[in-house]
Length: 219
Ligand SMILES: Nc1ccccc1C(=O)C[C@H](N)C(=O)O
Ligand SMILES: [Zn+2]
Ligand SMILES: [Zn+2]
Image (cartoon, rainbow, N blue to C red; front, side, top):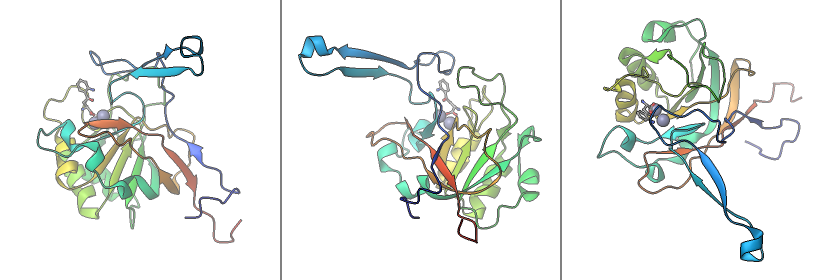
């Protein structure tokens, strides 16, 4: 990938983080404050943020669902960098094997699913189309390195078992949640969505960007 190709600008698919960003019920909202002002330091403003690691566009680490699972710093960054396919699944109420068999997923290492839930970063959805266990196993068998969704969870919002999370992490698949995909047509893209190097953390905000692959004519 040639990161200097200015004819194909990167497109931001991250939710902005501010005090209105939706958070899980009962979880820590995002907040930013200038902890030390320029006046106080005599030189610079110094910010501080408080947030759940699951607010806005973020990666989950296996530790999120498994006390013995890897934290975010220990994940292989290659899952979060490289070719990704965006696929519209907005007609589906569940993300299962039957649905995935109807899609063209050949050769995809990273899959970003555009669901029926509109991108509204300030609103926590009432329900999400959840990934079923057979769906998660099917994706893992394809050799997927990463699954991204445009909703806060790959499991049902009230799930305690969080089966889809367990299945994907057990099979070494990385997870991105709360992507903004509404304006992007289906197709193959380059993706960069690196988590912060937070040791032992159960997740991390990411700045997710994509750009379409160059077409064969090279324009
Ligand atoms: N932030 C939370 C606060 C309370 C309870 C669950 C969560 C989650 O994020 C779980 C969810 N199943 C997830 O996709 O990661
Ligand atoms: Zn999460
Ligand atoms: Zn999750």
